[in-house]
Amino acid sequence: MTADDTLADSGNPFAPPLDIIVVTTPYVPGYRVTKVIGATFGLVVRSRGLGQNIGAFFRSWAGGEIKVYTNLLEKVRHQSIERLCENARNLGANAIISAGFDTSEIGNATSEVMAYGTAVVLEKDLGKSQSVTLS
Image (cartoon, rainbow, N blue to C red):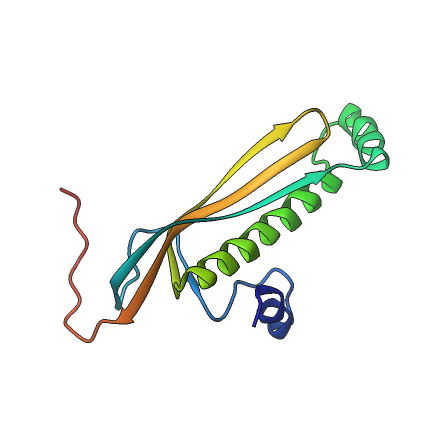
């Protein structure tokens, strides 16, 4: 099963994957890390079309949100998460902890979005939960 299959099954193209846990925290309550596999990422580089750039140029004069760019970046972020999950699955992980995004521009019309995290294997923790404290 691919990330595309998982997202398609949910009925929502922007729904999180159902077969792999992805969190921004370094832990998952109720689970324990049994194996750290290592860094994983999902990268998407997308070009904005000439029509989108022209429309956005005129919209920027009026101020406010440039929805064509917002929609484009939202789609690209979800594609990068799909690729992140696929990469982690290929490494043997069932979860990604400490997930985040990095974005940059390449030239004037190309955006790079990278989702990254640590691929791990989690197991249900049947022991008593402990509170998280910072040292």
